[in-house]
Image: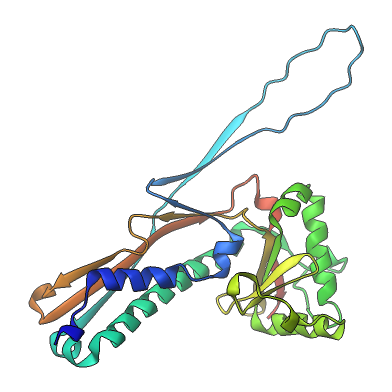
Length: 285
């Protein structure tokens, strides 16, 4: 019955293969795998130029150094128990499938936490399109206006350099993503001719942004929170000593079988100095 044995090394490899698969938050966020407990964001105040009269004395200006920090203290665990008889009867392949499913759940958990942090991003509502306050009603005829308004917001916040270096992103819900694809195709853009970024089937580049679709976006009674901004601005710290690691527990709690435990410890943060480049786009649900 050697084919029914769960090898920790095999399980870990299969789990890590899944965790390494392309997911949009790895492209969008500044991901830092670390063993530290605290995530830091040190930054200096901006320099300023002043007029100068030749031959005159000038005064030195002080600069300030700010170090924001946050604890990496969000933890999730996936403990699963396989009965000894089930372990023998399911076989090796099905056991490796459980490893894949645990990896998918870990990635989804991080995705949900990232897009669920919309309350800490810069609010972006219908006033950004020149209308009255409130949620944006997105249609096939104005979705390009929404994209352009997001780019204008980035430039207004002096984010041209970061945008040029990292690129922009928009994470849509499925309904709005379909409208964007429809608009793009109606205007001569053939998504089938584009090599999808990072091997992902849910994102494509258009109008200066990489567009993704997610079912994890928060939808309240009347508002769906679409996430947008400049890539690599949202800081995501992941504890490397638990990410992709597996523990096996033989006969846990005197139960005949094996316990398989994987976990993830992480924390995401939109720092104050980069928050103007990350947006909670509020659209009608």
